[in-house]
Length: 406
Image (cartoon, rainbow, N blue to C red; front, side):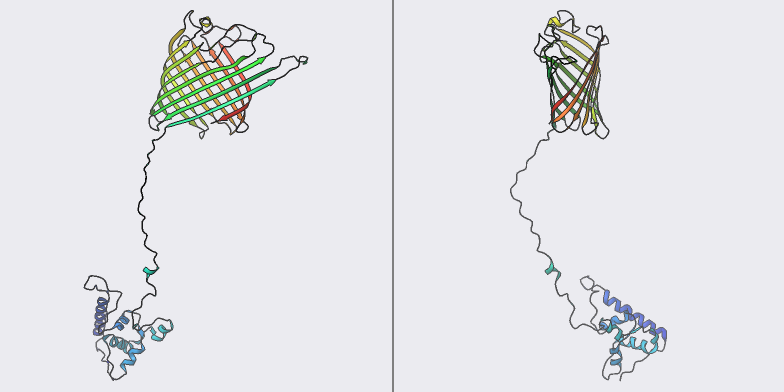
């Protein structure tokens, strides 16, 4: 039987234990010859893997006591140190090997290294193979900065009154059509070019008019073109052209006097100023405000007989003057079914003045049917003064009919 020699001095035993633990740590965690850590592999020298027990919580191992009392068995350095602790400092031992076995954790060496049952590579999916790029065609589209929109409306009205109706009156038929076409350019940088063509034409038939089968109630076509260069945010330096006339002749009931005709007159206004683009009330109120301190106005008539009535010099087809001009165009979507379009135009040559305020209220019942109220006051002191209204003129109508927006 081997006799374990106990060191007489405690400090020597403590030093030896410390040296053995340091040596064991260096063996386990020191890198190998390739520079890679071998911390995953315990040493297999004379100390054996039992040396790792010195780094674990102090436990009483049965095999150490068995080797100590078995003839012919050699104790390792780790066995001697643990056996020394068992004999001289038993209070340091916190557990037994049987407790570890009951917990299911073996403390002895495995005869063969433990390996996972399935290699992770076998569970991984197949490597993704990127498909070869086939022939393709690259298409580059030039951006289109043009937008187009329009609006068309047609209203009819028929009124029949018998000859013996107790309040009197007369039967009549009337029709009214409106069309607006727009083509606008905006490169989203500095340049804008807006073009709008407005056409209104209406006719009426009354039995009391013995001279004319039909008379026009509305007759106008107007082109507005504006070219703008951005100055700052919503402000643009703008050149604006407005040209308008009518399609056919106009008469009063039972009167042979011609009041206006095609290109009689033709009005043209060219102005230079600034535009402000308005967008308010969450995009419900949109439009432009044009202020022009420099404006040229031309009035032309192809019928010289209308010169006096149009405020032009006798026997002159043209009248030219210079002044200032402003134009306000706004569209307010008051409700989903109710819309208000307003145009306010003013021009002055500092000798005469023109002011027009067009208001169109549209109530849409559905996509196809709508009602319109048109209110149009106008001031012009360049024509002959009326004894009753002075220089003021007024026009209004109410219509119901077909309307389509595109």
